[in-house]
Every structure is written in structure tokens, then in C-alpha cells.
Length: 181
Image (cartoon, rainbow, N blue to C red; front, side):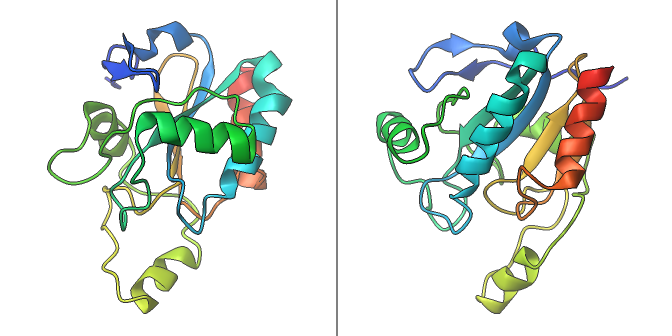
């Protein structure tokens, strides 16, 4: 029995308590984001993917997280402002959460348990090691901008490493396949 993500309580970036129930029947790409990361420019590609596919039923949900080298130090307000000013982000953002470690948010407990291994480990892992860091072992999230694909039933169907960008064929094809179902 796969766990649906719909009933897990989350908070919007405006601070409103909600769940992902409102996204039932949509294909979701859930991404842990950060404003001060080498991967932050991925916001641009994510927004483009969102604009390209939202009419067909794709939602991209951004969950800012400060788990990695304090690369998301800001308040929700600051994060929202940064995203809209620098990347014109229109896809939904949520209140900052923890995506790894002992205080990991229940949403990320569910996501990482559903698919413990990432697809498409690129050079990022080695870069972290070269930088003197100890990357998280699966099932933990490796870094900012890891991506989880959720089907229209709320089931986690794919997980992509942080260095796979939103325009990568592996993501686009997987999104299109789920949208077509």
C-alpha cells in the first residue's frame, strides 16, 4: 500500500495551515529549495516547466529548507520575496521545513521512505565530497533541489538527484508520462 502525500499537514509560505489535498488529480513535482545554493538558478527551469505544463495539470511545490550549509537562512517572507524578484516564481512555495535528519518533516519522511534511491546521481555528489562534506546517504535527501514526482493518485513515482535540472529529458519525460495517465 503506497502512502499518499495528500493528508500530511503543511504550511503555505504565507503561514496558513493546509494539506496537499487541494492538489488531488494533479501531477506534482516536490522540490526542496534554497536561495543561496549553487543550484539556486534551477528556480528558473522549474518555473519554465511549471508554465509549460500547468495547463495540463502539473503543479510544482517548493519547500524551502535550511538543512544544507545554511543555504536558506531567510524567513518565509524573505524567501518569497527573493523567489519572486529574482526568478519570478509563480509555482506554490511552502513554509520552510527540515527535509533531513531527526527533525525531518513528515512529508519528507513519506517521500524518502517511498523511494529511497535517487535517479541520475551526477557530479554533485563528488563535488560535495571534494568540498570536504559528507553527503547524506540514501534514503536521506542529498542536497537542495532534489525532486520527487507524485502521480495523480498522490503516490511517489520517481525521485531525481539535485543536479538533474527541470529541463532534463528524464524529468520532462516522466512528467509527461504521468500527465498522460
